[in-house]
Length: 376
Ligand code: SF4
Image (tube, rainbow, N blue to C red; front, side, top):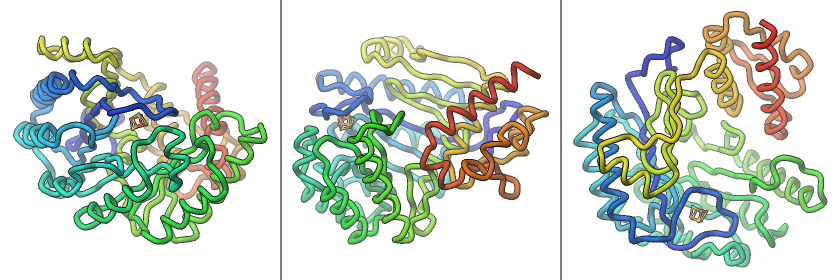
């Protein structure tokens, strides 16, 4: 299913809800999250108001996926999550086969209760199977905590495990432990992220070690039978994250909460990342947009290609041509095709080499599209 190129909202959307609270901050974090829990109750009241406002705007669409992320959703009282889901169910039509994901930290105290909310996908942020690294970056859990949470989550849901490569004090042993955990537990889904500071230019000796760690981890996971369906995401037996696929396929989703963003038809918005502003606006029954715009054809083309190339399935050339009639990938990317990009059947996609150098390839692709538009 695609958003139509004419810009109408499709009949099924995803809902993302941001819970911007963490009991403490990890050293590497650049997500929008706060440690002042005196705001929590008021924040959730604002979030419920935002759910209501959107349900009025989208009375007929079905919700196919729900994703609660953060922050740390597992740090807030369970009852607030329960009430949030109650409201979503009351105010939206929910697809029978909906996917409901929640992110939890390995020290989650209520993981067994998530089944009662119909959560069917649990994403656990282990980050590194090495207590020394976890301590160094101020994670508030141990590898043993992870095992306990994993076993409970696995009994009722599909499970994703998040890893980050490139954390301080990470060693060869850390990566060996990461690989061993995946081998032993065979989670349905694994995400392997490279710490952002290492992403742009891999040229110092530290970064070469990190690059080597990343490459070894990815190869090991692939050798276990995982399908690398997105640059950083790996699934066993087709257990893709349907919610995140909506982002990468540039489909329709509603983002709720502080700093959350959405894409509906041609509309693109991002909410305020200030807690006080978000709460005040919603108290007054207003949306709390920080950015709200309607994509023109060029912007929609750029977003569709930028997100779609992250996927191994790539992006439909026909869809791109519906957005830009003269789009010709063979001419535009002639020197990238073969090594970094390929056209397979109907799709333009990255090669494995392109995946490995994705930041640079994607930047180049977007530059060329901008130049194409100037020269039309
Ligand atoms: S748990 Fe996640 S969101 Fe919270 S501080 Fe750590 S990295 Fe940031």
